[in-house]
Image (cartoon, rainbow, N blue to C red; front, side, top):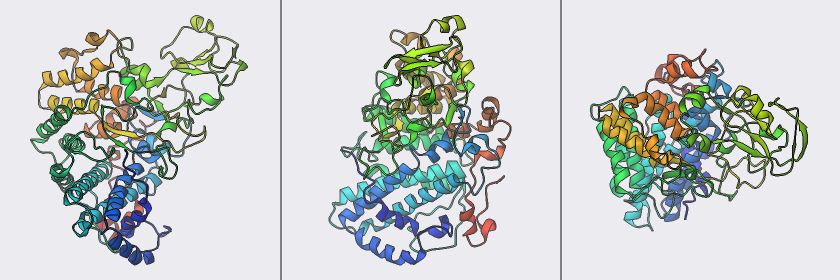
Length: 558
């Protein structure tokens, strides 16, 4: 079964809102006058087994404020070397790094607010656990361990995004104007302490029978990534890469997690609960428990629905055309396509007509008109510049790279959601895969490469590459030692993980965000500056702290 962590969430959101002066502006509809009453409800209800479990589930639900949301995707996909903005959307400034992205930006405030709500709810669960009755001590310890791991995860996102933030490890029971910014070293110490303390009490397995809970495998996977990231931060220690390697090896070797045989099956709808998945955020087809849903299905799609022979449908998706792959992605990341299957299994290449008739051509002028019956190929994107004479022979429009624009471009397959009730439904139903074994192999390889263990790193990368090969091409897919370096690994991560809310954090970890955006993202190149490796602290957070910016300083440049 799945953990249902949306139900009763809003009872517990108000526990998080008790720290309102740190997060919300005057316009917030939640009044501080409500807080004493809310606190009373929380104190009583959370002492019961049901209240305690609902509180834990509410902490899990915070994951839905980041994974699969527009804000989570904009903060990790936009403004990188592999994606730029498409035609539509009101947050293009996150990609372009222009003056519209400042301390009053909605996403900067929303990410901060929702993660702190989750953190304060986690603090409440952890502190109140000793008084809970009607639940075994073993389960109570397990739930507290899960909550600590989640609190660490929220602080890890905040640290990567904003730098040192207000480090609160106790429940905020009343409004306060006192807040300070912790150092990066203090942030990592708290994150690692929570994760390592959680390990003994978590289920010692890959996946819980109550699917979606944090297990020991998940926490160790988190630790491998935390140490890998810490190793390039100002808090770095000599053994960070060693620890990242150790934890990644534990995940790979100790839990029976396996790579699927076919890369295409990892994100195949209906197969989200597969042997490669280490952790995913749970969504559902039930509108009563799905909240805002997993919205990622809309953002990576091109404007197919106004083209000849096509209209919007559930299968092809609701195209918001937010994210367009850069030329670097298409021409330098996804290479050797006759050997590596991931280009064609990552991008949608065929659209079948659902609006029959005769039409004048639009982007493909190799012929004057096209005629379709239902189910005929209407659009084919071969991924290369097919000659005009060859295109002219096709009874459909051929979308070649020279015709790509902010409206038509290769659309990502991974997040398509054909299980929605209708073609306009925004609230997606699919689980969001956060961690999977292929990434763990790449984390291990990076940690080993940074230690000079090149042969071991190469072997782990080749495990991932062999799986990605077309049938009979596995040997050709193996990268040779002479061609293997950090640049190769940086591209390999996107061949495997494109569009999975990783890239901005990757570029920041490598210290290459500004350099690579200038090289490969023409929309962002003119504006990105060194200070953009951090996001702006929300202005309402600064305004509500006693002492203002002198007590809670803004990040440089904002």
